[in-house]
Length: 197
Image (cartoon, rainbow, N blue to C red; front, side):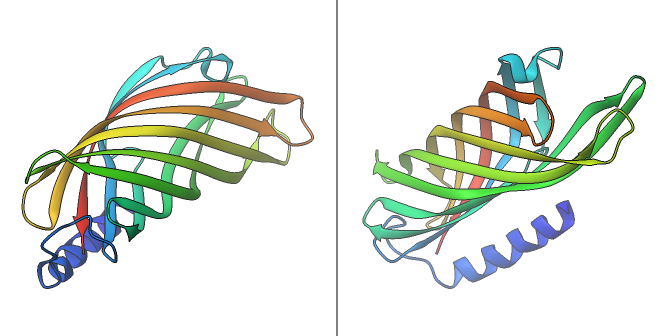
């Protein structure tokens, strides 16, 4: 999976180099993002009770997104996030699942100077996965996450930016046909890259 992401990033870079715009946040431009490449996250709430309270990851839960600038500074689009999680399926039996979350993403960019952009984004992610508990059959698990991201984007070139920001999300996991519906929240400090085409 990580190799595919790196190949996609290289192809995007090559294309962007030939399609660069004078102003990266101009109406009609496209933004491709590779987020959460470095991430430090802190967890709270019943959903994360008994789990790790915080963790540092390198390319752990990779977030990819694409947006279109409908007007100068305002971009709308979608995002997908590749997650790996573990849970206690039964006493002494820990299962690991990987799944995709996807949903809409809206961002507003404010130029600070020629190299710095401030952005604030809102997102809503959804996923459905199958999991085994207590040695039984597969159960359907619904997951949702919505939150806000505030970032500083530093333009390395006219089309490539490195971004660093804070992501605060409200998370929910519900297991259908099983008495489980828990909420939690996550505060993350993330670093990623953005390509403006």
